[in-house]
Length: 108
Image (cartoon, rainbow, N blue to C red):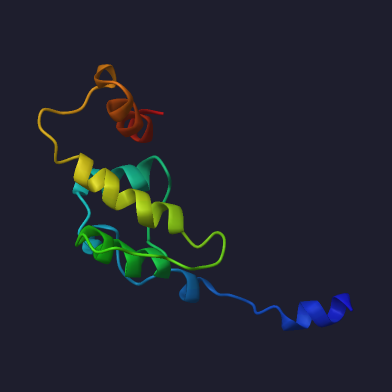
């Protein structure tokens, strides 16, 4: 029985998971791309992220359905952070919950 399950499981390669583009090519702020790379270690977006982020950035409603571990959380959060970075004056931790949510991503 266990052997049958193993045979049914498909081996997934990096080429199937990761896109052949960069986070910056998806239209994200350069500073956000730097944070994704330097703090989180994300060099290349997944296929899910590459497909979802541009659509979310455009303001359209999106429902992403993909397997666990394919990058859905970053696909949703990166565009939110992208838009929050446009606020001027810059949001500080002292600005309350809104500022704290924004700050946690970059400073923790």
